[in-house]
Image (cartoon, rainbow, N blue to C red):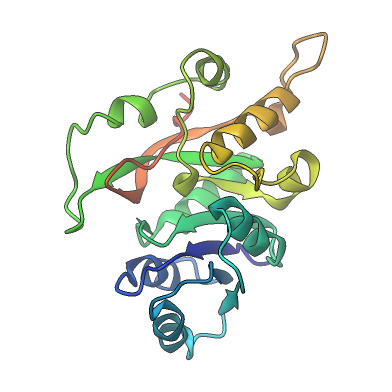
Length: 231
């Protein structure tokens, strides 16, 4: 099936290597790690280079000018060589078996995309139980209910949790790099709208959105979004 690339956006996270470690230590080994340093002004680049120097799966791309987060992420995604794209910010991290379990589920069910539920953690990596964002991101919704909720309630999906087939970006575009916030929500709306027949309202099965009711992601100070496991 080729590589399952991961992307990581970094901006002044010189002391936080947890994100990189959580990718390189995945139980799923057939990965590619593209790290974009968004013109950081601390020692991030040197620390990253030292961390990945002995792992040929990892590559650091240095931007000459600081940009919006979405531009850096798009730059990383467009430099991926594999079939699937995973997103990770420099202050978040994954469970060790996230990619293996999520990719296997997608292949088994012939899915082009999936999200998961998430854990909200503090700066000491301790899970914050019953965090108020749990009610936003860890919902038990069908694909139809999820689409409706995106319109009526706003974003209920965490960018850290998704795995998308690369063809989705080729068809619907990447993050809008002009947006400082909600660039992920903007993409979810474009993607969700594209899954519906314009007149008939038919949902094309291979574009259904699936949320796994497992928490494979850790979102610092907030919550990682997740998809419901269909039942």
